[in-house]
Image 1: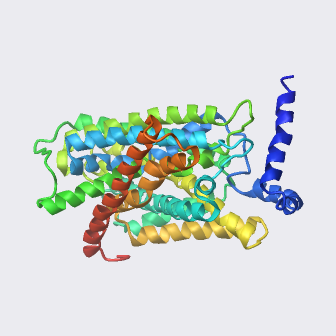
Image 2 (image 1 turned 180 degrees about the vertical axis):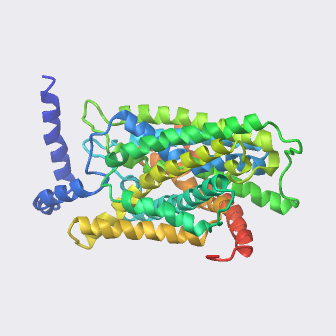
Image 3 (image 1 turned 90 degrees about the vertical axis):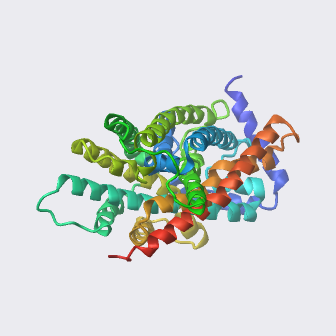
Length: 461
């Protein structure tokens, strides 16, 4: 009897589909083999045999990125009280919205929403869903990759400057970004999420390692003699703008939602064992690691250095040299993995358009050209605008706040329609209001910092 129930479900699902769109059934039937071949080629849907721990380290790699290193600086702009509250609130809200996305992945029986925009189309309609989700998701994923180009390059430069102090010619950041990019011209050709699992695992271990080094080294260095915990800016206007930008830094630190459905798509699923079980287990483990990385770095870093902390905590730590070199090396390895993780859904989008809309054949040559052009583009933009801290604030608010803090809540309200004034209804609206405030305020501060940095920056010098 137990083996018959799944068989009995299929005719029900197909009869429902016939009721919904009987006229559209024939062309779909004709293209089934071709569609399957394309889906087997596309990065997100080509492999569905991931284990729950893949989800854990993919989520750690996606979330604990370079953003953690800017958290002490964000604390300096937020202050003790607001800083601690915003950090904890962000952790709770983003865990809740991540749970929503995991739940919504298979809410329609027999269907999986493998991509963020597919869930958007279910919530807002075919066209509107694309227009709402795709631009924001692209800003997030391409934005992260550009920022990681800069982070990787600057970390390599830091290693070079620390190791080679005598008889060494100083090199521009541009060259280090190009060296970092050269790795991605090779790794970008790995076909799907499961093929980068090893890189992602190494990146997750590295993120925990350099976060630990950052707060342990800060603790060992001790509270600085001239430490001050007041706001950095000398004017009220500067203080307010810095506060807004710091909100963007925090939003950037919790940016893993943009790839969560794509990660869940790699986990096998059956009616008896849906993918949300192992995925949620992986997410919980990842969030414990996130807490172990974020809170000690943010609080101890700010406690030791006060408002004089650099926008990258490792810059404030120059000794012991070997430890800081190791931490920067870990950062490089981590952002290599994280870059690939965020690039994969972008590759999937571009390759889907090329194959399904523009009717290109799914070949290795197409993949080779698409991915190399993308890596070159992110490298070029990273070289042109290497304002690390300001970029975080700007991108963090503009795109990460919606996709992480409140878009899942809007989808939840649109799809599940919880009773008005119920706990679920209130919770979602609180998240939406806080997320909207974050989205409106933080890019203002980030854009101001970019403008201030641009005044003293000569392009390609």
